[in-house]
Image (cartoon, rainbow, N blue to C red; front, side, top):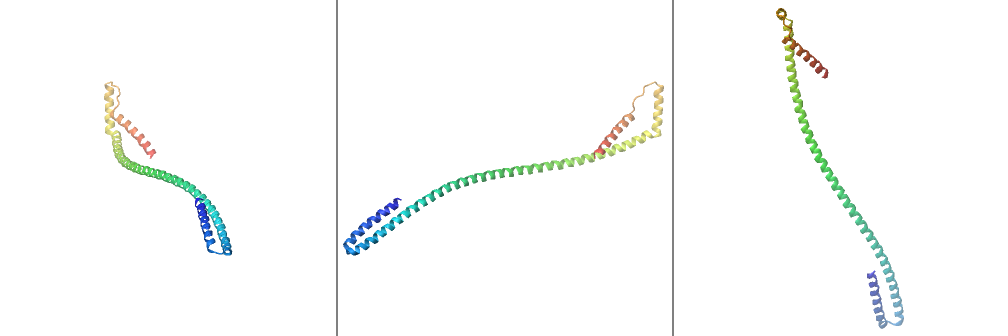
Length: 193
């Protein structure tokens, strides 16, 4: 608005100077038409000045709105940057956790593979021991069924009775008990498989 008032003052001053020049240079009938022309121009300048003032107010209002919107958008951008930063940190943490979990899974898989190999080895040992126990059981059963064993047991039983000694458990009784427990274990193992 200061510019408009200065512009109007400048135009009024120039109009006054122009009138003085016209008073000296032109005849009175010419001066009247020139005065009318100057008055019309003066009115046009006033209208232009008002329009310019309104335009400046609208422009100022638009600038204020734009500044307000700019402030809002800057706040939104700052908010989005913070959210993006948080998402990035969350993503990096997830990547770190996934990497750790992958490493842990690989370690556990290696442990499982080792355990599976150990189980296979132990199963092979158990199978070998079971075969040996089966062979020993068959050999012992054959020995206990043999005529020689039966005759020896009978002779030993007669000698014990003649000496009036009490009956004591023989090693064969212990072995038969061990094989009975082994057969129970083998049946339980076979039922689990």
